[in-house]
Image 1 (cartoon, rainbow, N blue to C red):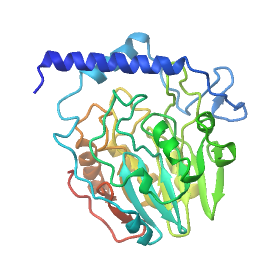
Image 2: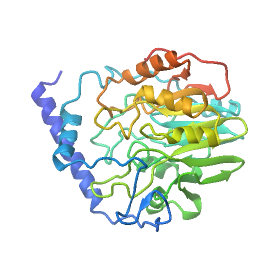
Image 3: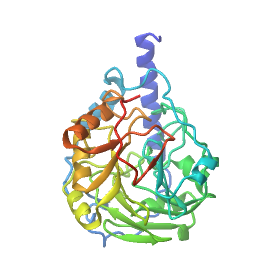
Length: 363
């Protein structure tokens, strides 16, 4: 076991490395951004996207305090003592699975099989959710399938541009395997900068939609923020997604605080067979950008969901809570509110319209 002073030194070096990487990213050529002044979510005066509920501005001291607490004030138990078990997944198993099948691969990365084609949310296959692979949050488990073994992907569906949802190395590796990238406004500008052809990108504002091979994709409101450097906050939009196919109607929350628009989404686009709800990385210091588990269960009810699946937990140390806590709290709330909560292993198949499931205890 490393000496406490050694651990503190390692954390200081990691923090300095990450800040240096973010600053270096901020000095690189700016993303060529389109004119988004027509979007109701865009503030022309500020040159940024904004939330329906304004987020309080933090002082420099408050921001520094957040960074310090995140690196040096974490409680015990935010990471498992050993690598988590994973159910290995093969291409043959994926091909043999019926339409309406879903697999949670990692974090917020879910593979869907709809209308005989494959769809992938927020793919991250890298070892770390970070601007660099030698520092930053490291994954707790192996990927259940290698990226190269994935079937051809009809569309990648992106919720926003944070490192744990838009992974540069994963996108580059997927370019030859993916036909289409669907994203909120501005995120596609980043993809173009990375070499993705413009004709393979569709960018949508909230409530806008596109249809791909009979699957209807609708960008929905979310309460979050965006940015990948120290000076590009909210230059791109964030969103949830309604993924509406013949075999299944799926909602993907992306990252979000709890907000009133969940009810409007449920009224306009529900009911949903499955909701993929963010459960993890919450804290009392940022309640407007990440839901608490109990709020995620309530959002599922607002959406008129039939079955809820927890995502955004169990892969990376991104919060101030014990790593098992998100699922424990979600399971307790689901039991109290009679919500059908499914917590699949990474790599395990589940059926969007299958029989009722019970939430297993956290691994």
